[in-house]
Length: 169
Ligand SMILES: Cc1cc2nc3c(=O)[nH]c(=O)nc-3n(C[C@H](O)[C@H](O)[C@H](O)COP(=O)(O)OP(=O)(O)OC[C@H]3O[C@@H](n4cnc5c(N)ncnc54)[C@H](O)[C@@H]3O)c2cc1C
Image (cartoon, rainbow, N blue to C red):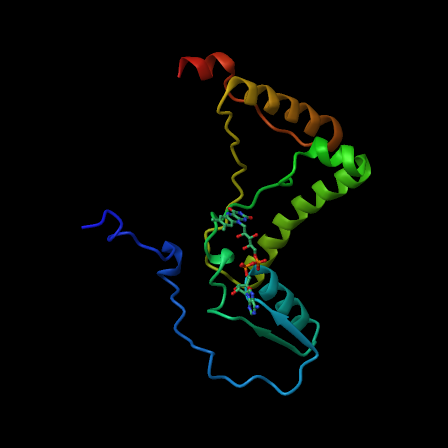
C-alpha cells in the first residue's frame, strides 16, 4: 500500500464548511457594472465592498468558491512585508517604507473588521508572532531588524534567547 494512500488532500478547515452549493448551472447575468474574476480573498472582498457601495457586481470563478490559495493557507495575519524592510527603504526611501509598513498593520485591522462585520467564526486572535533563527547569523539579522523596527517604525519587538541558547539546544 502506498504510504500516501491515506493522505488527506483537502484542507482540514473546509471540513466544517463543505461547499455544497453548486453555482455552475446558474446563468450569468446579461449585464453587470463590475465583473470580478476569481473568488479568493481578493475577489470576494472586492465584490463585498462594491456590493456595500451599491454597485451591481458579479463574482465568477473557474472552480469552487475560494478553492485555491485562500482556503489552503496557514491562516497567519502578520505585520510587515515579504521583502526585508531595509531593502524596501533602500529602493523606495524611508517615507514609502513607513507607509508600506503602516498598510501591513492596517491590513490586519481590515481582516478583523471583515470578520466582525461578517460574524465569521474563524478563531481570529491577536497573539503576536514568533520569528525563529535557524543559525546564529540569522539571530544577528533579527537583532538588526529589531533595531530597525524601533528606529524607523517605533515598533516594539522582543528578542528571546541568543546565540548561546541556540548552541546549547
Ligand atoms: C500553502 C500556502 C500558505 C499560505 N499561508 C499564508 C498565511 O499564513 N498568511 C497569509 O497572509 N497568506 C498566506 N498565503 C498566501 C495567501 O493565501 C494568498 O496571498 C491569498 O489567498 C491570495 O488570494 P487571491 O484571492 O489573490 O488568490 P486565490 O485564493 O488563489 O484566488 C484566485 C481565484 O481565482 C480563480 N481563477 C483563476 N483564474 C481564473 C480564470 N481564468 N477564470 C476564473 N477564475 C479564475 C481561482 O479558481 C481562485 O479561486 C499562503 C499561500 C499558500 C499557497
